[in-house]
Amino acid sequence: MLAALLVVVLAGCVSTGPDTEFLQPVHEHKPRSVLIVPVKNETIDVQAPTSVLATLPMVLAERGYYAFPVNTVKTLLENEGYYEAAEVHNAPPEALASMFGADTILYVTIHEWDAKYIILSTTTTVDFEYRLVNHDGTELWHARKSLAYNPNNQNSSGNPLVDLFAMAITAAIERAAPNYLPLTRTANAEAFRNGQRGLPPGPYDPLYIEYYNGLAINE
Image 1 (cartoon, rainbow, N blue to C red):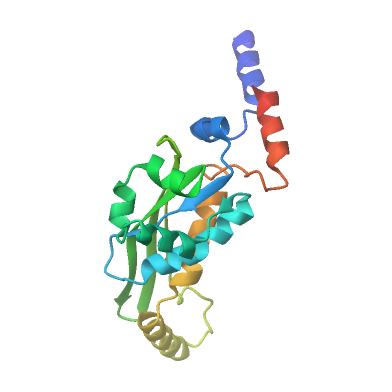
Image 2: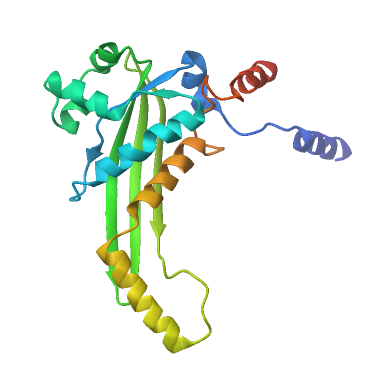
């Protein structure tokens, strides 16, 4: 029994760190550039893809990757006859990557983009799916992120009547103009910088060399 207990204690003392096995394809290919293609929108809000594209390049740049300018990408794709996001998502990755000289392609699908109004509360929800594919068509990374925002989840003033009036006004404002952009920016940042499921540092991140040196030591 003492020997068995010693084995358990020693095993518990071993620090395995976060599980990065799912990132093995990224580690092998070490991409430098990301081609963000038009976003596939499964909702009825036609402005949703624009908001997503407006926030993605900065998030990827902060993570250490070069992101091709999304407006230039859109223009060049349209010149090649790709006018719809669904067409781009169905196109051969090899053809898209060679068109721009990109290492990888990022496909994003919007599953939910909605503001639900219930009595005195409005909850804004976004749900995005991300796929990073190598220039040869190999999937390197996949993630999905869903976030919700309710402006009434704030501290109470202590006066029930004042709080009720404030909730009604806040809910009406959020319903009329949902706060999508900050929520989208947060969702993208959490998806790519997540310590458990996010992308590793890219080559333009100061932590890039340290990160990959650490992997070599642990192998």
